[in-house]
Length: 389
Image (cartoon, rainbow, N blue to C red; front, side, top):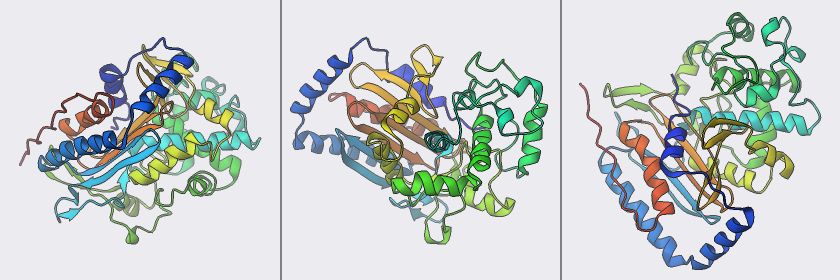
């Protein structure tokens, strides 16, 4: 089971709250805050992150942390081991499984097709698939993007390889858990259906369309499923802190299974680096891939999924009382974890990836955020995992 929303929930409860500030208030606050910034302050911020991460590395953290502040990339450093068993060090080029962060690429691809006039967000499933059961005929693309389709969250295991026809039959045969449009129910299945729609509309494999229309124009050459030549990369090997043994990687499983399962494709499992995800953040900020009005739709508050949080298209949307609009998503499978948190009004971002999820590493996002937002905050070092033989 993947825990793609777990730490967006924790993030919302710990450090993000609703704000009644107007846009003008936020602009004024940003202007004042920007004037107070100095290179010395940036250096101090880097020193604080270095101190935190050095201690975390000593306690077993492995991964990469990237920080942007006020439009400036100030931190991108690697820690620990890409392969703990072989003692291969993590580098900035190490590839990590980013889990459900994959959803934002699928959503962007759908919006690109919308811009091209190839589909409407109000199109129902019955436009793209034959034999849709009556209870699912009126599910729309918008419903899938916002997790309001009513489709059950899970149909199978991530690495259970099956044909698109078999996958669709599984979806067709399961009862809806809610009427379409009547409530937020996080469902990986919906994004796999979106990936199928992309294939049928574009007449291209999902990953090919994604690369040619989204990843390549944004400069993300180190992001993908099976298009990457993994012999040219160091791939992070997952390590189970609970079992204290190697877990492996997606790449090994795809080789064994003959490809990427429809249980995973479009909703999770893409491999990437922090720098590629930073390029993606900048591409969104500058409307490099999608039109400005489409970006607004992409990051709009479409459906409430928490009293203080909404879901956009592949993003959780929150409001910070000091930084304005926050757009974020997490991804993970219990071994790998990744987070992309973007302060869109103040051009700041926190991106991190790890190949050994533990209670301590889960809490790391909170510490990274608090350092960025609270000058006097004293961060807590992550707990050293208790190993089980």
